[in-house]
Amino acid sequence: MLKRLQDKWKVNAWRLLLILVTFAVGGSLTGLLGKKVMSLLSITTPWFYIPIYIIIVTLIWPFMVLAVSVPLGQFRFFVAYLKKMAGRFRRRRTDEQTNR
Image (cartoon, rainbow, N blue to C red; front, side, top):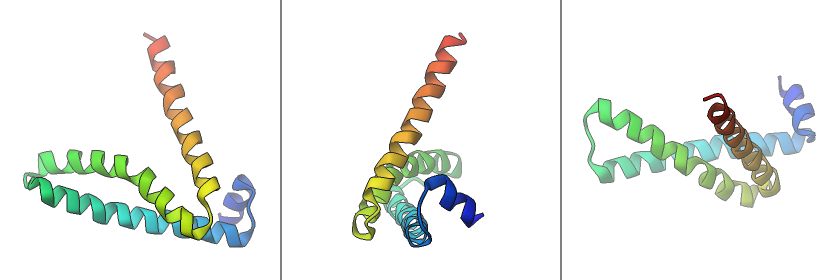
């Protein structure tokens, strides 16, 4: 599985490790920051807490991953990765609008 990622992203083993660490640390920091934001909002009901938390985490994640990627030297990879993800979302939205 790691070899497939290495081939897909065209990186060596060392860079793959740094990329995976960036994903892990960025995701963990996103979860922690999301919980802090939710505690500031003082939302306690689960039916409201969960969707708001998901939205907040989704908005915070790209910034956290970029912030973590700088000290690990993977900033260019993650900028390209996020641009590719944004392109997929835009493409999907335009596809849905043309099907109407």
